[in-house]
Length: 361
Image 1 (cartoon, rainbow, N blue to C red):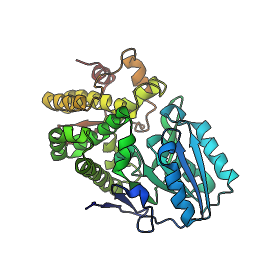
Image 2: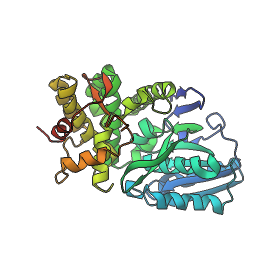
Image 3: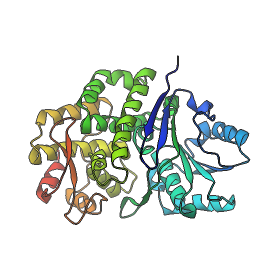
């Protein structure tokens, strides 16, 4: 019997996350809270050929107007030009404020579609249907939307919460191996930042997860979504605990930006960033070196990189970190751990400590 996981993200902008194999084929009223008569389905040219017609047909059966906007896949296209193209599609279809955007794709699609929804007529509904593991466990949940600029990642954006998140783990079967591995970086992050028991489980179940065992994958996705939901409910606008979700991201975003968003993908950059954060934690938080080695070993089991790519200068990466959204008047803030599952926000870290963490031992 198919198990449906239903996770409630509470608070003023409450919504549900549904996780169920085969869910994409039954977008019915039991999981679909939006009653709009106008939809713009936003996807990319890698995902759309697999799933767009299936979603469009179900929407058209229930509503009058469904338009589709497909853009070129890749982080390098998460920019102002693509955002403008999506808003042009909204204008062409005569989208009213009560229209709805459906984001069908990975994190890039979700961020772009969500940002367009946040901006169109100062806010319209949107639904997340993530198709990548990274989006399923992280970017589709929490209401962060945005686009990249030449100066850095996600520097233009808004908090805009979805009406519902619909996750079908069966969609991972068509996901390229590299993208699937990237998603496991975010899965591992949840164990590293706040759940040592989950980290232990990932070590034991790594082979089953890599093989996309349905039960293991569904359990991992549900565990990550529940952890994120709990944090987001407490801190929807990242003024406290939610910052912990950025473990490894300050380093990772700098790497992505330095490579022009055309080198390591987001999950790979986060994997490297977590290793840097773990090394930094040994110096400034007294974290055990053995935990750093466990993290590195687990990331490698999933085929993820653990060292800063050759050719990137630590000084340049540090300069890019100064534009990171987590910086404030007191300077850079880093998420460090005192060991697996015990993270905290740290300030007062010196440039020398950061530069040392960027260099593999």
